[in-house]
Image (cartoon, rainbow, N blue to C red; front, top):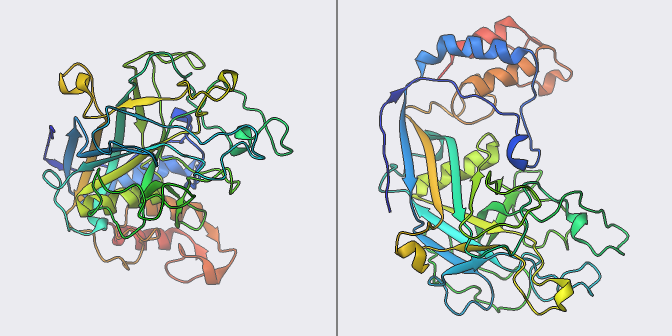
Length: 391
């Protein structure tokens, strides 16, 4: 594994993207307004108050990669990891009652502790960029779809809730990882049992694709068709070498640019770096077999190269890779400091934006966090209080 580390002192404000690029699902976001420009100007003037150490982390292969499938007989050493859904067209919702909807998943983990200091507390890390790349191991077996597909589009066409997809193909999605069966982010290895219960059944796998629900709680997304909800992927795979809807050639590189502006994903990454390892799960709901082939399990889904692949070991192809840009905050401050409106332990441009969003008379004076002086109005006096506590 190669870790490229660039350390230096850095003073900057963080930009905010609109979240539309890269086919990502809309998320909980800070609102946009003409005040954004003002926030950047003010933030730029006082950014010198915050000095961060910057680490560029680059791993050319994962520490662990595991095809997360109930009947994987070679855990941790398989050369390809396929991702698909347990599709059975004859079932009412089109999926098997015996297995998770997202039947075959691909778990990767990257140890970061040799390059990024651990045990500083999650609030001491700020991830400004996180990108995962993979390489496809099979030739022309599935079509490229760079966009999210709603859960209703996976239902049988005769299902009353079916909504047709307006794009060809299905996306590859990247999620966080949840743990059960007594394992956690540090104790899990690539040879850990798929399940301590049974290879059959739903919600039994030791690790699973995870997002966060509307309340910010971790959620297993493995059966989102059964449970009728749209998950929020950390990223959707993108490539600029294949046209949307076209077949994907062997050794095509897909890039997953993680939405680090999402506060819940940011916290997931922070907690992972504090532990010293970051886990991700690749998932898709591609059909396990082409219906035209009468269920013979012909490959119609993505298969991803693992670090054990012979082409990878010979230096002719790449396993999953991770790059991170991480800012180490020397003094994250008091989590309860006045002006820390988003509770991340730092008063910065994100808190400034929240204050500007609430500018004016408070609709509910009892629930108006940006009213720092308790006057019932968010105004310049509250702005001055926030700036006094910057950093």
